[in-house]
Length: 121
Length: 108
Image (tube, rainbow over all chains, first blue to last red; front, side, top):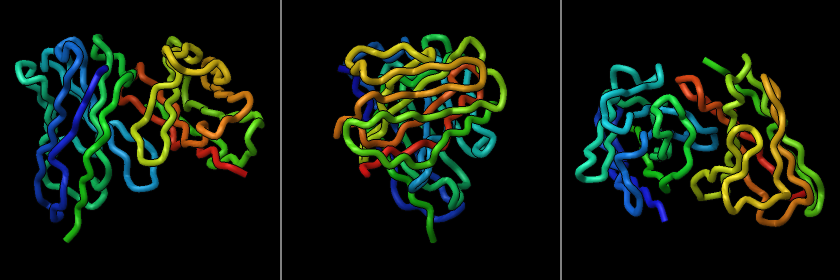
């Protein structure tokens, strides 16, 4: 069964940084694009960032562009989200999810359980 | 950016009743690349439909999806206790990929 496990969340002050990881198992990681999707408390889902199978193409929501960087290491079956200059509005549960083999298909078939990011002074 | 608006925000229904959830797009969704996800409390979303009406393996047939263009509907025929959850629609063809704000189906 496909498994995605996020880690790296925690409490950080406004303006601070965090690095999230998404470790994959039980499937061929390099055959899927990977998305990061967040959910603020009591709110809906919001696409944050995506990365293609080979890492050569990335996409970001306007709200995080210039502050977040997505990457992946297929040899480690892991994707990363480097988050900088964090704001209170970045707070929420961050999920990683598989997306299409074609980067431009954003269908999220498999999801991790999420890691919680809290931004507060 | 394609904005998705879901209605109603909350649906209060009794077990066995029929649930009808709406998702309206600000512009036509190309190739009907519209998905629905179910999210139970404390859990990650689960893919319920893709391509408007295609169910992944394991999704019960009391769930059905329909629509095209800008108007889409998720129907649950005969609510079961495990169906009480939040349902999200998503367009997955145009970056940035966008979700609706969700519809909560709660027990009446």
